[in-house]
Image (cartoon, rainbow, N blue to C red):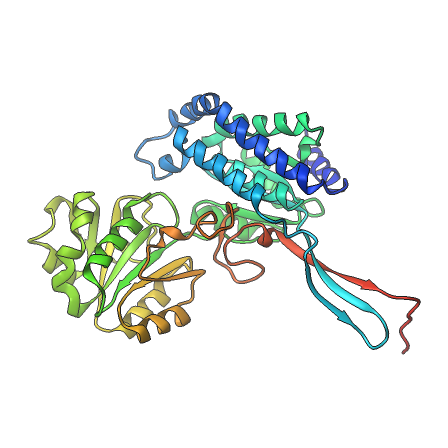
Length: 415
C-alpha cells in the first residue's frame, strides 16, 4: 500500500460519525482485557526486538515490556475509559445584542501523527487517548520496536473489527525511514505531528515537517537542594528521581546544591551510592565526596556533563553559592521539562515555583511524578515542553481543539 493510501484511509475514517461514548469505552476495556490475555504473545514479540539491541543502550529499558508493565498499560487504558470525554464540552457562551448566540466547544484535533522510537507502550497510549477523543491516529514507530508494535496494533485491530469499527482509526506505518519522510509531508491528511523520543528525533521532526508539530522535548532535569533543605527528605527525593527508572524523561540529571550544605553531600547521596550511581561532580563537590563515595563511581565533571540528559545511572552535581545562582543555572541549562527544589524556606519555594520556566515545577517532591497517569490524565501522548496549545503531560483535553458555534435567526451584518 502506498503512503498516500494510508493517509487517505485515515482521513476517510475521520469523516465517519463520532462513535457513541459507551462504545468507545467498551472498546478500550476490551483492548485492555485483550492486552492481558495476549501478554505472552506480545512479550515473545518484544523479545525479538530486545535481542537486536544492546542491553546497555539507554533505550533498552524503554523498549522492554514485562508482565507487570503490561498490567500497568491495561490499567491506564481502563483509566482513560473511565475519564469523562472532553468532546462537546462548552467552554463559553455569549449572547450578543444582535441576538446571535456564540459558543465555543471542544472538538477533536483530527488526524494525529506520532513518530516515536523504542517505546511500544506508546502504541497503546496513543490509540487509547486518540480513540477516546475522536481523533484518528497514525503511528510511525522505530524499527527497533517493530515486532512489538505489530503485535500490539494487531491486537487493537482485532478488537476494533469485533465491534465493526474501521481499523483505519489507528494506523501503524511501516518501520522504514521513507514512512517518516512521507508523514512529515502529509499536508492535507495529517493535522498535527507529535514526536516522542530523543532530542535528535524531536529536532529532526521540527526542522523538516511541513505538518504542524507539538514538541515533546527531552528531559534535562534538575533538583536544587536549598540552604534550608531537609536532609532526610532530600536523600529520598533525589534517589527516587534519579534511580526509579533511569531511561525516562523525568529522571534526574543534575543535583544542584547550595555551597553551605556541601558537607551534607555524603549523607545526601548515600542511597545513590547504594544504587551505584556514577557522579560527575564539580570541583567543590568532588572534594567533599572523595573520601565518602566509591572512587570508581566518582568523576570530575567536564563541561559536557552539565545540561545533559543521561538516561542512565549517571548524574551531575553542581555547587552554587546562592538561591539566585541556582535559578540562573537552571534557566541556562533546563530543557523546560521538570525542575524541583528541596527547601524549607517558604519564600524560596514560592519564588522557585513562580519563576522557574518549565512544564512542571516541584517543591519537596520527586520529578518522577511528571507523568500523565500520575497527574490524573489516565495516560499521556507525550510531555510537551513548548507553550503553544499544550504544555506538560498531554492527556484528553490536550488532544482537542475548539470551534465556534454561532446560532442566529436571520441576522445579517451591515457595513
